Length: 237
Ligand SMILES: [Zn+2]
Image: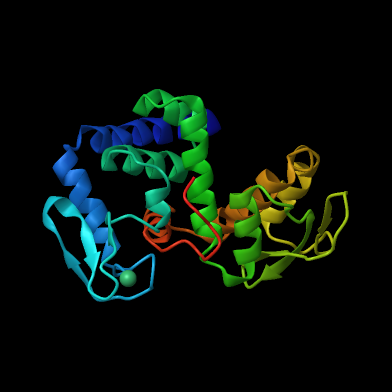
């Protein structure tokens, strides 16, 4: 029975991915442009929001005259890629496919696909203000905390990064027993998680929180997160 479910979702996954991969570049550009409306353009240099369009798709700040591309300063702007590839990356992420599968379907190198996956994880984590400093450290290759507290929150879970220093991974979990299924599965896989490098562990924990708490897919949330401006201190890759 379980195997059958997997087969069906794979067929669906391939179908949805196929639709994205067949988009022409204008359609894909329009989808990303549309998503950017949720977060109006602002000047990366002075923060001004009075922006006008130049020819060739560039934008110019009405105040300081700085000109920039539409994705400059947004998470999407970290990688210069065709819009269709971005959409495929977001779809793969939603489906829980890894960098290897993304590299295959979109003809990217494995390191580039892994970077895209990481940018999506960081953009999603940055939606939560209590994660800003962790996201900054992940982006800059700085020291990332290894201490976390996992709480039950309503029907779901909440992962809090703790500021404590220490070389060992510490994950405070609610007492076993009346906990949600997601936490039970998490406990079972904990030893594997604890072997991850600190930055990957942190981002994976946040991803796990989001997946555990959401009934709907992550595609729209990830897209909304990626068009946001990166927090100060996070630079282009
Ligand atoms: Zn400006």
